[in-house]
Image (cartoon, rainbow, N blue to C red):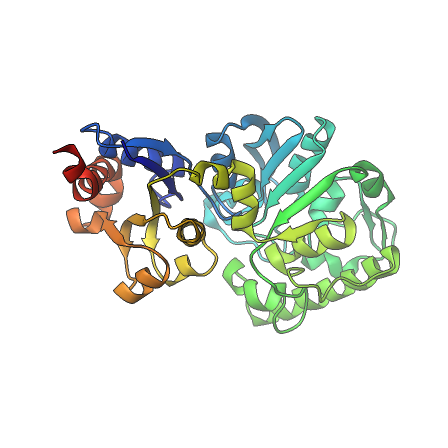
Length: 376
């Protein structure tokens, strides 16, 4: 009986990766044609903790500060002394009340609070996925939650957010260094932007977080001032390091103040969930994503799965909500066939609402197309 590895990402706004994998698996197994293994994947952003939990990590609940100061009930994943933390789940755009953007004041403090909970819980290796952030505060909120002291010219605590960094007069990170001593922090990061300048955190990502041209300039200047003081404190300047501008400068804080290692998100997640081991002995790999498009090919998890399978000579099929990729794009990505919900249900709202049943149907279709002859 063929062994099928089902390794989808989430269908955004519809189903988690685990739900997608389960639905496809039910369809594939309906006629007993295949043995399935479900292993949801992610790229270091939204869905990373869920992928870890689906592969055997435990959920650890925690309450932390959202990007505009409101409490957020969230969780991290843990196995042994390894923790997986997702910035999007606490400091992300989805955590903004009413979706109201706050480019000047959004804080990464909650991300630091979850890191602190993991460290105080005994974790010695922490993976931090930083995609989907709402912040441009240079990771200042994060390191302050870990014990750093930021004060203004009147020796008063600085308020949160990127705008406030313009008034930063003094910082003390000695408590952070002590707290993080012996902790290995890996940041899942897929961009190489510096902290400041025309390709920096404010200029490139600020507008997506609600900043207009004047606010972008103000944030960029504030981040530059902050980087000057950090460099004076730690004895090196990380503002131009590739990835320093990731997640509004959380990459910079990780590198300069937390001794972090930055790695591509897909690589980090694959290591976490044991993807290479799961791929051993697979006769087919099924990937999945809500929209299979150009972005998929640029460092997204489904493309990473397809590339890894291709290296082993394992065929790959894709199940998706819709696909805008050409036959040539798919072939170059190592995808031999595509099954889209839009082929069954063209109405997007209905497709998202009925995604589970539609995915089961597509799973059955994959089984019939590829394994029917094996049963006769």
